[in-house]
Amino acid sequence: MFFSPDQPEIALLQDLLRASEKVLVTTHRHPDGDAIGSLLGTTRALRAVGKTITPHTPDAPPKFLRFLPGFSAITQVPGPIADYDLVIALDHSELSRTGLDKELLQGVVPVIAIDHHATSDRRATVALVVPEASATCELLCELFPILALPMEADTATCLLTGLVTDTGSFQHANTSTTVFRAAAALLSAGADFRSVIAGVFGNRPLQALRIMGRALERLQASQATGAAISFVTQEDLKECGATADDLTGVVNLLNTIPEARFALLLTEYERGKLKGSLRSEPGKAVDVAAIARRFGGGGHTLASGFEVAGRLVRDEHGWRIE
Image (cartoon, rainbow, N blue to C red; front, side, top):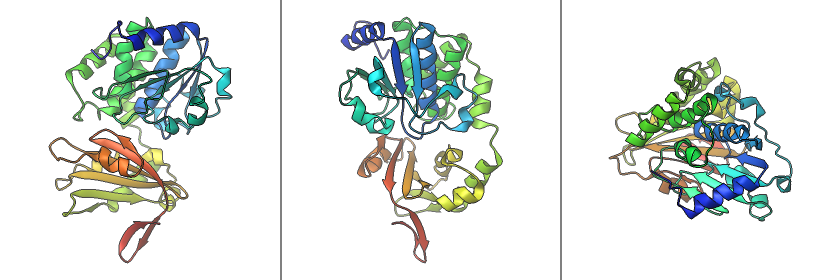
């Protein structure tokens, strides 16, 4: 059990929800399955009890998640924060990654933070941060019954998406007995497991396969560091007709080569902006969160990321950032 109804934070959370009518629900830049699953699951659960909810992402959500109920209602323009009674930040790691940190830190409205990242920003009216959880959606599976929020079939499908993506379809080291119990409860509530698997891992468009091939072609393995590294430039994305979302899961594939102690995928997702995705595995003694923190990022010991300014350049010596 991650939460208890007797926790002071839970009591305050319940009071804030009761007192709020108009709620903004947000998450991090470049949202993944757990971010969108928790965002839409929370949106549906709160709407079911009569709240007016605005789901927000600072960037457009990835198209491969468009099968999720409520996907089309996600906005990148939430309007003035002062118009809301409450803000709920989910799976955000740092408030700055919501793109709303300046407004949220002014204290105009209360903020609830629910997250599973060890490096999570806890500057909130209520901060429920549990690094032991596999996903934010796993936390919501336990939290919704405590808050008397209904678990309808569509809500369960959204939350199951977060479990599936953040555990790598129940293959990563963060898969536990609690994860399987949560998944079983969601399936019992009517979650559409086949749609989740098809939406997340199937139906790969041609441009996604092309950009994946480009990343695999560039793969470099260092015997000295044990790093498996690849690079994707803005030109690559344009030539393949792809976006950074089409690279979902590629860093996990890089990490499968036997000589890799960890994997790094550097993507120039916008001109002058780079995203680094890091992965490792148990027993390899690499804390990729520590690597990410050196570049202003964070995450988990085995799965982390960061963003830096710069561009990818290749010369006679290889790839570099400038």
